[in-house]
Amino acid sequence: MSIKENLIEIKNTFVNPNCKLVAVSKTKPVDALKEAYAAGIRDFGENKVQELVDKQTQMPQDTQWHMIGHLQRNKVKYIAPFIYLIHGVDSFKLLKEINKEAKKADRIIPCLLQMHIAKEESKFGFDQVELEEMLQSKEIKELEHVKIVGLMGMATFTDNEDVIRREFKGLKALFEELKSNELPQNFNLKEISMGMSGDYLIAQEEGSTMVRIGSAIFGSRN
Ligand SMILES: *Cc1c(COP(=O)(O)O)cnc(C)c1O
Image (tube, rainbow, N blue to C red; front, side):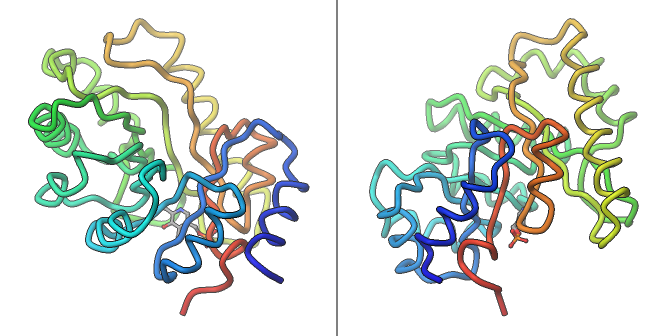
């Protein structure tokens, strides 16, 4: 099936038609992105800065670029001038660096805090204690060039749907808990980025507002 057909089929399965679709185009050639663009997609997700910047120069100006992977602090400067949303903010240090580069670019960059929800010991993401510490700090309020618009999480890589569902439920619960607090003015929580090709329906059932789908659109990666 073509990219366009895949997109139509995926959208038809959405249990929440308002859920945003980010087309994860990592490793795929620009021609594939253009095909998705022609089919109406404007949001593209990449996980490597160099690749994202390369593709950005070759795609139409109104393409919205999402940084979905682990972001190294020394690379923030390359995407700060144009990035639409950074999904993988996994440390306070990284958030401060984004703020610094956003200031230079005269922007306010929307960010999602990546929460560590999976069983497996992935290195990335805040745990609840780290999140609490950041919220208690007085520095967080001073970051005027970032806007925390939500949370992001990745479920354990497993076939066990109960495990995946439980982890997504946990992220949604944390999101609601967080929202019920008094938060700094650079917070405006609206998005929960969860769900990929294999688990986006479960994610939507559990309250995802944004799914990041790659292989189901573009085919498997090598
Ligand atoms: C690659 C990737 C995806 C998309 O994965 P698929 O299984 O191909 O849909 C989503 N989120 C992140 C963070 C990724 O790195």
